[in-house]
Length: 133
Image (tube, rainbow, N blue to C red; front, side, top):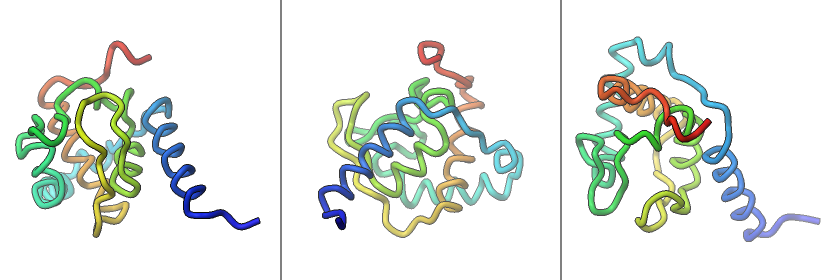
């Protein structure tokens, strides 16, 4: 029996919830240590993410800050960022509307954005969310 559009959307939402809610953190250590990748991630972030998450990663009136322990790798894994960019996100930590998928980004683009975000988090002293296992 073929899946309908509703089933596909449901599976996508469940995949995001699973990846955001309990997946073991993945790291971008190799990417994080490559200044060229981080710089490219900063450019991609500025073009695709800063309008909502702020040019300084501190959020805006329309999107949450990535310089918050909630986005530490042990709470939101790198794959959670991948899933959010690909499928969007139903809000569950903040009172913002749903995030729509980000058109035009592939997995490598998002990995570079995550490398930038993780580098900035590290510089801000954010390594893990102590309230999240």
